[in-house]
Amino acid sequence: MTTPLIQHQAEQQRFVLQLDGAEAVLDYSLSGNSINFHHTFVPPAFRGKGLAEKLVRHGLAWAKTEQYQLSASCSYVQKFLR
Image (cartoon, rainbow, N blue to C red; front, side, top):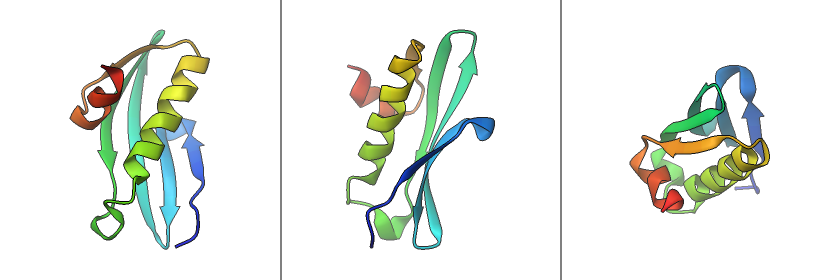
């Protein structure tokens, strides 16, 4: 597996890692100056490799740069906001 690049698909409100024909995703929704990260998914074959963490850290860094108020209804993302 090559090192995946994270793409921000702003129109779909998500960050994506392309993985040998599959996708790992971090979905969010915007409301004013607030952002809610609500879903993280990594295909079973690619789990345990730290890809979800890379997606979350990338998404949170972007949101902080954009000065959004952060929240997460996704339990995985909540761990990074404590």
